[in-house]
Image 1 (cartoon, rainbow, N blue to C red):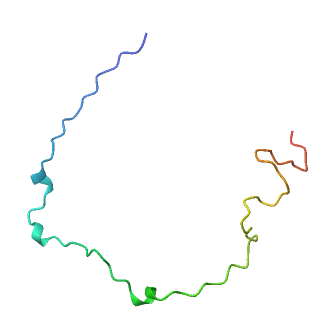
Image 2: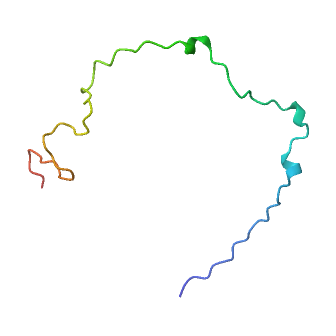
Image 3: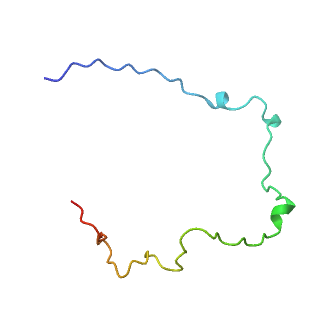
Length: 83
């Protein structure tokens, strides 16, 4: 037999009207400009930086990791026996 549960009470929420959400003085609100001017330092293109020297080489155009012709979904073979 299931346990008897008490009914949950719901708090009543008052519906907010448009007058409650509208500020009192709309003329004093500041509106952001449609187009923000960029600073002069960002306008000129920057030269490309050299690639990092550390880390594995980036494979160009290949999605595989270079382990030979490994079929998709085939688990990797380990050199030791997993028991």
